[in-house]
Image (cartoon, rainbow, N blue to C red; front, side):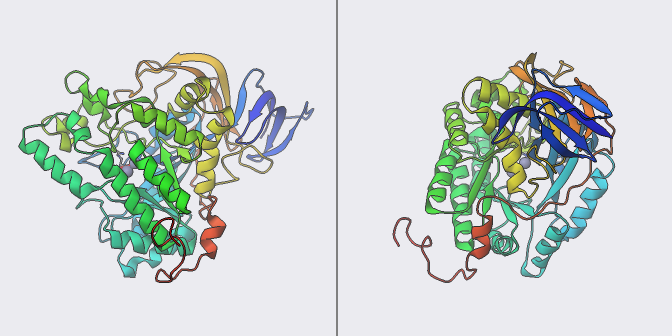
Amino acid sequence: MSILIKNGRIVTAADDYRADIFIADQTVSLIGRDLSIEADTVIDASGRLVIPGGVDPHTHLEMPFGGTTTSDTFETGTRAAAFGGTTCLVDFAIQSRGTSTIAALDQWHAKAEGKTAIDYAFHMIITDMPEERIPEMRQLADEGVTSYKMFMAYPGVLLSDDGTIFRAMRKAGEDGTLVCMHAENGIVIDELVKIALSQGHTTPKYHARTRPTRLEAEGAHRALAIAEVAQAPVYIVHLSCYDALHELRQAQARGVMAHAETCPQYLLLDVNRYDEPGFDGAKYVLTPPLREDWNQDELWNGLRTSSLDVISTDHCPFCLREQKELGRDDFSQIPNGGPGVENRMSLIYHYGVNLGRITLNRFVEITSTRPAMIFGLFPRKGTIAVGSDADIVIFDPEREEIISRHNPHTHHMNIDYNAYEGFAVKGVTETVLSRGRVIVDKGQYVGRAGDGRFVKRGPYGGQYANTSAQLQRDPLASRPGLGTPGVR
Ligand code: URP
Ligand code: ZN
Ligand code: ZN
């Protein structure tokens, strides 16, 4: 099965040129001007951008959480992702406390295998990593799971103490893998939640009031300091505010091997959403919460200046009816999370590129190339190059849509609301190839559940990969960077 994409404008993180792409055996096999070559299918991409498929490194499909399960399955969530121009997800498997991470991986394989529209990989959420379990981290890496998520929030459920985090980071540094950190001081947050409830504050807006930016910044600061001493790279997930961004920049300036992602909700929605009428504010009960709107410019600035590496979605959908309802009388019982996997590419293209906040190349970089590099998928994913998987999006930069749960072009996620309801976008995914097969053809889904495969990821591949491998591993040795910042 071969495909020739003709007359498109190919845009990668680094390039922008007109050429044809010949695809054979699931990969890009030739790129050149005016290729005259026989192919089973010819696609005319005149007037379109031809970009690498999006890589979303933060989704939660079929995830048990907050007394319920996220409403998108591996089938519905990956299909929605495909409609939006994302061709690879990194989802989260969860270790149950006191049990093996390898068993958890098997469970998640069973959920996903044969169901997905696009390729996928897993991170492992570590809830418990005593010394005797540490070798499992290497085993996971051998299985292609080369990153882990740890939580400083949700005490008693997901939270890991600082010792566990340090142990895991040292091992990750040694193995060339990566710890992703949910950075929030969950212990203090729980105290604030108790105070709010004792004062009779039960509505969704108290979700935000009890999770102030300082507690996200404190978590980020601690995670970065622990990574610095462990001499390991770290990746801060869903960074939402200037306070945390400031900590990230300070650490990066000290030479800490620090990466971070933000998400469309923190760039485009703000804290006033919690005041929507009735119980509608529950739609935005996601963690960290939405922030005051001035943080948004700071985050765009962080993306432009490369303090922030990636835009993921943290797609974690719970229906307003029945699921978010669990917390109607108590905001702390509202399942935390929101949808977005389908709309990321259009939102960031429109509100980023069209509004002059980021360049077209940077758009590709933060939605595809950087996540692929950091998470060991590059150059198989994240670019258009000879030998890369033919995960390609033909994107119409002129087409306009209004994102809505009721718009059949913008909402295929299995959830009863869209967090970006009414947002106008110019720039829409038209056709999607997953490993050389057309799965979305001019907006119509033509793929099948089971087209997607599990991708074994390679080691951490961010810009500190070499540095990390060469650092000495003795955390007791004195060396620059472990004393007072700026004092050697
Ligand atoms: O609200 C969120 N983000 N739910 C998903 C779990 C997490 O912390 O990523
Ligand atoms: Zn998180
Ligand atoms: Zn998440």
